[in-house]
Length: 138
Picture 1 (cartoon, helix red, strand yellow):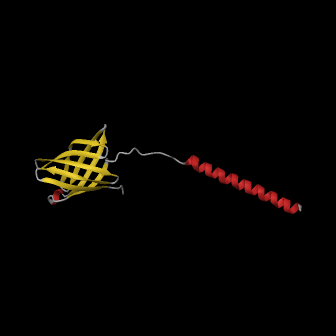
Picture 2 (picture 1 turned 180 degrees about the vertical axis):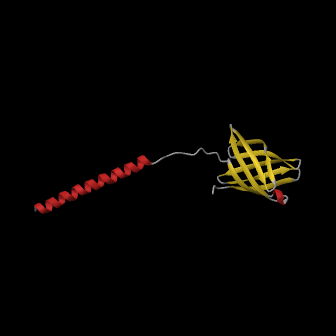
């Protein structure tokens, strides 16, 4: 009988020790978790884009959108050079700007939704649909 009681005591102690170890391991994990949030600025970054029904050299490129001193800067990278945008405005997830292409002003309005953007450009030649996606770091 003493043998069974002794085994039972050892079993109870072992169970308690395992329970304490498991509880402290769980507590340690909770303490080691780092909770942080990255400020959400939906529009900044590098965006690959395409434009429909325009000359080939303007049909695709990369928009570089950054923010310096609370002002947004847009640079349009084309196959044969870059164009700096003017009159850049951002409200919520909508960005508007103008670029000068071959002496003509082109107004651009883009709606950003996560890693995708869509909108249109307007010039004396008409309105043209734009689609884009955020470029991911390699």
